[in-house]
Structures are given as structure tokens and as C-alpha cells.
Length: 186
Figure 1 (cartoon, rainbow, N blue to C red):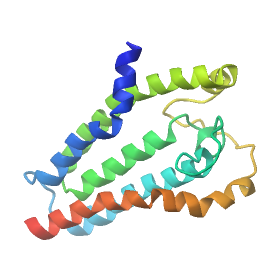
Figure 2 (figure 1 turned 180 degrees about the vertical axis):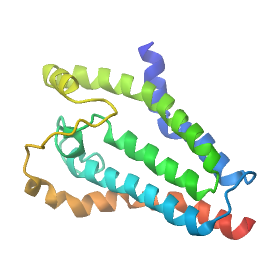
Figure 3 (figure 1 turned 90 degrees about the vertical axis):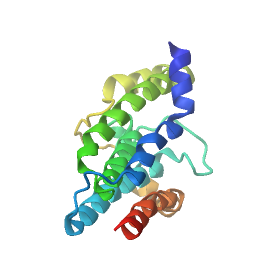
Figure 4 (figure 1 turned 60 degrees about the vertical axis):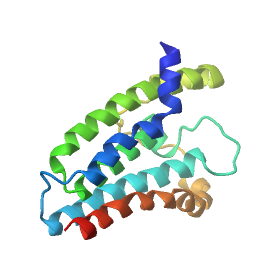
């Protein structure tokens, strides 16, 4: 079973391609109110990007920093803020596609894929960090944030704001096809 989880983990980005291609290419059942769809879709997408930036400021995944067990920032509240951010971005892209009826399908797709991904990732991190990670698992929920007060100073991560924004700028490339779809199809 863990081999299946590892394979899903390895291709997690590719697994998001089919629903994204669908919402880019499919046009039937579109909700044609650009004054609602574009501001709402972009706002949802932007929330996802901001969550990715916040997580990146603490995780340093794409930054040249030594990797440590991250328990600050959004990780103080929930174990998987990056996957929550990705799901939020994909839901925003779905709204931008004008296929509002597809949003629940996109949500379920993300939930299924990321359910497999985190099982592999958690086993890997438990082997890597041992008891410290087990304590983190016990104290922090996987998907639903536990609202609690963060105990680490925010000043220590400010130096990572600009590099984190730069590391996540590529996310904005994801909305280009939806604006092109609107221009070319309508």
C-alpha cells in the first residue's frame, strides 16, 4: 500500500492536469456573468497563492535553506497548508473557467489525490524526524485548522517574504489560460 502512496506522491502534479485541462477546454454549462466570475475566481485563486507564500516563508521548500521540521506559520494550525492552498487555487481556477458546476468535482478530485499524497508524506516525515514529527502529528490537524495562538515570533520569517513571493510567482501563470479562453471562445 505504501508503494501506491509513493507513486501518487511522485505524480501529484500530473494528477491535477486532467481536471485543469477539462476546465480550460470545456465550455458547455458556463456561467456567463463576467462581473461575478472573474473577481470571485481571482479572489479565491489569490487566497490560495497567499497561503502558499505564507507556507513558503516557513517551509522554505523552494528556497536555499536547510530543511527542518516546520511547525510555525500556517503549520502551527494545520499540517498541509500547501495542499489546502493548491486546492483553493484550483477552485479559483474552476470559477475563472465559468464552470461553477465543476467546483465540487474539483474539490473531490483534490481531496482524493491529496489523501493519498499525505499518507506517503507523513510516513516519510515520520521516518525522517521521528518522535518530533509524531508529536506534531498528534498536536496538529491534517486538514481542518485548529485555531490557536502561534508561539513563534513573526519577525524571524520576514526576511523570507520577498524570496517566498518570488518562489511562488509562477502560480500566476496558471490563470493565463482562463483569460485566453474568455478572449478566444467568447
